Image 1 (tube, rainbow, N blue to C red):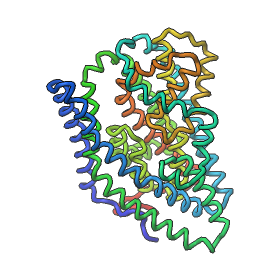
Image 2: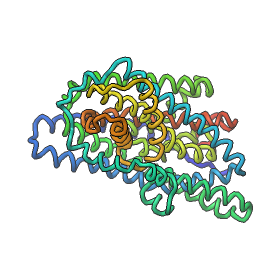
Image 3: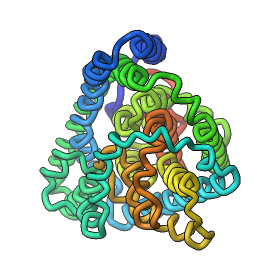
Image 4: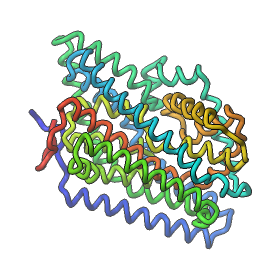
Length: 430
């Protein structure tokens, strides 16, 4: 069988990682020099313009996500063979997603109650301008909008707006229907398989723009905010990083129990480049195509990756889930709003549900926090307090989302007995 991927030479891959790291350092240095030496009139348009490099990279990735999700998910379902297999694998994936989400939400709740980071926040450093755009998006979080984010009224619209969850719903229906047709649909399955190969070839081209995107994104935020921001938010940020570290330990420990310690180490090495890109661009979505490729090279079968990974991007954002409870309760502490344990647990369940329908909303974590604060009579403008440092928090959230979905896909593969040894040469498993 023709291999799904032709592996790039190791030196070429290593060189791209080095370029990304250099772009991160250069972006911070250039941004800081602009921040300390330029006038306010220069900094604002400079940050906006240099950030276009980051936006170009993100848009290049977004350009290929919809056709990649559709083609790989439909082909994956067709390869699974029947609706019972789809239901079995989907059930195992949802079991992991719910368990990981609850663990992440509970961790944020416990940390905030123990360390009370909200009491250290300086209310005078709120970004009231930046929160206005979030207010617009938070109006979408009604029951009606939640349903609309799940069920597409047009697959073309879902593709155009990169509504991954809607696209997943359509692709599942399409894949199941195509499977039911049997041999009659085989030419279309082969055609979509070819489309998936073409899109994944494009991934390599798009990744060459990653260093420029990283440089632009980091230069923009450091030029606008500077490094002094950490003086005001060091405690909040430190406790958040502690939460991320604990969450990584929990996720990797659970993964090691199922996959084995050696395979988890191998997985981390395999996805190091997607993790770095997610960290530096603050976008877990930006690495979806590359993550698909690396998970198959790790030994996951194409049919599992193409089914579980798109579901994970809608249902299994572990870093974002932990941050939602952490930020919501920290804002309540900053404003001295008392919340008993039962109210906090209710908030946790609300976050568990509302977070599943906002895949296409910009800065989704903060939008959910904003809506949740309003629901529990916490001043919603409190989001402006944490907004100045949110970019740095988002770097770690995005990276955690990637490791969570990589583990989820690999664990489901293991449960299905479909996890191979991975590629040892130039080609990956099909």
